[in-house]
Length: 434
View 1: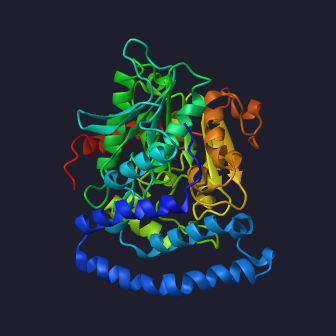
View 2: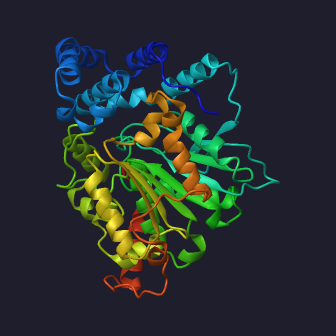
View 3: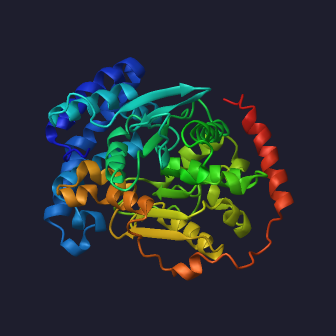
């Protein structure tokens, strides 16, 4: 089930659903102050910068994204860039909340002639695990593959409901290649309501739910996936699972990462003219999630700080990674560094770096691209990687990347790693921290 591009009517309806929720969930004085501060942007800066760059600047001197973006995409991304840099997180989270995202998705279905989703989905809440189970799940016919998905949003915003349309599109593209595939999208607690290690604890609990209830313990049938901060949690989860005594028997089969936020705070996270993210806001959100400055160098909080190749080798899923990101991303340098580490650890990695594109475009393009081919490209690539139908060419040859005979550097002994993760597990299992 793949819907068409977001229209101007969709934008108006989204605002109709959004405004009452803002009034209900955000202090009215704060809303007014925020609204007043936005006036110069929308009346002066947005139209002037849009017109000057698009129509009075030589194409080669425009930002790489604007060079390839039609006006509607350009306009939306300029608004998102302003919002990410200037809107407080408690306002931003309302945009992606269930009470806005779900009725908007329902309207999108109705506009395309559906009275309900052609692919079933239902809410799950069991044993502290909350999320959406998407697909034709039957207890007497277990799925051949389960995608365990963690959403992005800087740990401070986002919900599984906001990702419902992209995940339904992904599932519909997987169905021809797998028997009865399903997706479980976790809804984890957001900052500042909860901070590390709560989200990692919930990610682990969600993985346990998938293993126990959806695949009967067959971990190789699980694909762990996420975008942005959700991809951070996926990497943290993999590093955590690597130190478990029965790690090999509990490894997921594959991992797909969309624009991963590899290092929460890093001098390599640099602003670009194209991306809507900015390093200062990212570092603020990352610090709020970590709670303590010293945690920012902890691999279970900020996976990019893990320098130990043997740990990455143990953490890697059975069939490796698929990583997709935009060439103009703020997070691009750290993503490339992660890919380099994985290859040095002899982990199989499929890489899709898209020149001129920005953060999480594999998802955003489903809403913003004009042609069917371009709009579905990110989800088709993701589904193809998962399904093994087509593999994005990696700079590392398959013979090299799949080798298992190479002796890994002993930078971190198994005993040291297990002791460290056991210490962190004690904190995670008793997550009373708020």
